[in-house]
Image (cartoon, rainbow, N blue to C red; front, side):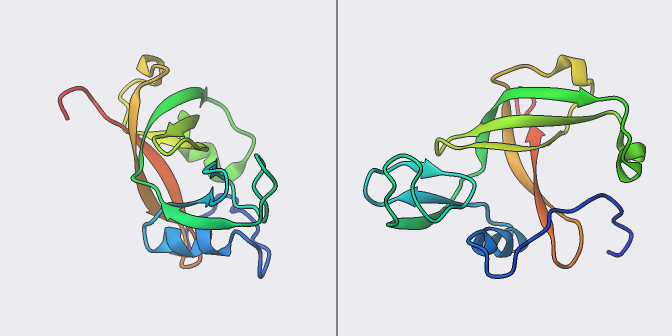
Length: 142
């Protein structure tokens, strides 16, 4: 998979997010939850942003959610994305109470997308080191 030419996130060795990245390679989307106040947390952190507790645990998302917001990119200055236009980047509210940004795929017409439209999580292997989450639009009747 050396032909992936889009920019990739930079991982910090030993970072708190390592479990998240490793789990994506296994096609699992992991998020944290505070064991003290039950707050769902994404992106990975060392303390709960709600109560400042360090008592956090990892949980797997079911991968179901709805579109909170999105934008369609028709023009890009980043060479790796030029062959992808138009593409959709969105904020998705997962059922577990976390909001995640990612590409939204599976649409025939980006102008037909709607806020609160149902999406499901899929995984795209970019390189041996990176698997990325994307969200597929669920058409009515699926």
